[in-house]
Image (cartoon, rainbow, N blue to C red; front, top):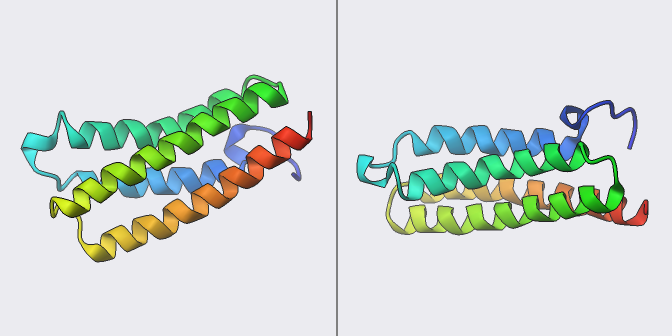
Amino acid sequence: MGNIQSFEDLECWKVCTDLRRYISSLTKRFPVEEKYVLTSQILRASRSVTNNIAEGYGRFHFKENAQFCRQSRGSLYELKDHLIIALDEGYISNEEYKTVLEKFNKCIALMNGYINYLVNSV
């Protein structure tokens, strides 16, 4: 794992933060009527991803950390579903969805790797 001093050093947190920032910029263009509906759900799910990585890291126990990372992974899949809805509603383009999907797939791969590391460290 290298020299990890904080959750901010975790590659999965860094990549998920990049996704969160991209999502934030996308949702700024969503219709006003979605502000408290889809936009809110998308932002909460994207923030939950990095929040759970940070909270799990703070637990200092591999099993607890892995459980928070599983929740983070669940939030990623929730986010993906919300983005499919945004695509279906025409709030994002096919190209934007492809960009999100690439970022999503990288996040999932890193989360799975980190979860496997944590589970095998018990």
